[in-house]
Length: 230
Image (cartoon, rainbow, N blue to C red):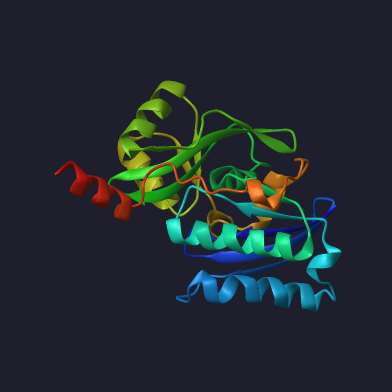
């Protein structure tokens, strides 16, 4: 299956083309430009370089969160537009699970996918590398680093951090004397290749069913609820 994958849940944006799980091409950009300006153009340029169009792919995969509210909305909207325009199905995957797949060849560690959620919290999910994939240990969640440290202290395992919150967590664990590893920089950020690996083997669905998963309300929604409560 030829899969076009999209990642836009944080500052970096990327697109990738895989063929039966094999990476064919990936375009990656971490600039100050908004994803609404770069994401679709990257997909078009990548397919053009491969002498392909959306009609040549079998499905579109996209990270649906958690992450930046704006970034996720742009990614999901881009995926839906490509699917509807090309009459293609789609696959939505967890941003955290996609990052974990980037370290799935590591052994004897717990892969801790982390994103800085602000407000003294991180978005997190933990995974075990198993065979050629990962096994989920918990659901995607918003927790404090101290809560994650308590879990790690009880597990007795080395935590391998990946994601834009990885360095923050690694430093905190190091200060507490907890065993921790930090993913090398080329593998640390979210990528469309990670999305493709997480989507591999999953059954595509209709794009109409694709929806973001934010884990918590946006700042605007929180402020609105506060005003209503007052």
